[in-house]
Amino acid sequence: MEIKKTTLYDAHVQAGGKLVEFAGYYMPVQYRGIIDEHRKVRASVGLFDVSHMGEFIFRGPRALAFLQKMTINDVSKLEIGQAQYTAMCYEDGGIVDDLIVYRFADSYMMIVNAGNLEKNFAWLQQHLEDGVELENASDAYALLALQGRNAQPILQELTEVPLAEIKFYRFAEGTVAGLPAIISRTGYTGEDGFEIAVAATDAEKLWQALLAAGEPFDIEPVGLGARDTLRLEMKYCLYGNDIDETTNPLEAGLGWITKLDKGDFIGAEALRTVKESKPARKLVGLQLSDRNIARHGYEIFHDGRQVGVITSGSLSPSLGYTIALGYVETGLAAVDTELVVKIRNREAPATIVKTPFYKRPY
Image (cartoon, rainbow, N blue to C red; front, side, top):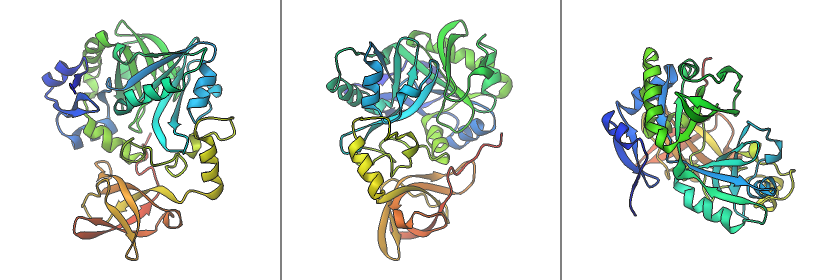
């Protein structure tokens, strides 16, 4: 399979980005270094290319009813200009993907994970009904994420849209650096910030404009490596690591987006059964006692018995110690529970801690 390039490929090369294959695209994993880029976002601001994400458009008189059937959150609660974090599930409650739905005046847009783009589109097409038009507009859009406490003053330099009026998980249409754009107050870092969607052909102009406007705040481009450590500190799930077709939203801590009382949707029956019987395991946050990193797939033990598995792990650049996410048996999922992670041939003590690991100070 040919690896794709986002329209910002050349800009990443010029900025010294270390490019790797990710979800079928060449993407920058880092520029200056993962830890430095991570800390830049926490302390000031960073700019991400997330143009590999997928965008699907839904139109027609049955678009709302269709999205209600396909997703687990309650799309009917969305106002025009509002976005919603949600997921799609299989009949057995396993997760197809986690995603964001945007409500426009005459349509809906779904932003999906790049690695699941084709799978998601096929799943939606398989269930498509009369009265719904579905368009894969992924190649038409570029998506940039401006994240950090100084994101608003930088972006305000480039737009007349009053950004202070855009609340969390809301969006507005306008222009940024003279380019038609969708500006949403969303992100995957735990910091304040915006995700800006523009035509793919406008991506480089927007990228350069944001970097120029951000110079007084020492803005820098940030790669996928820091994106991963930033989201891990917030206990934001990564599809393919913490959630997948073998996990359900209730055990993954996503009960808050699972609206079992909204009516029928794909996976609802299975999820009601899980809720009634209570999940057998839970996704928890772990702090390790040493600097050994618990990787995806490492086993978790209690009193010599395996009780779970690690899904994500890293040294936390913000906190200075090693953190991880993992599923453990529900009876052992309480905060302060002492466990052991098997890291290669040794045992590393670990303690369940409150999440998110990081709380922003503003």
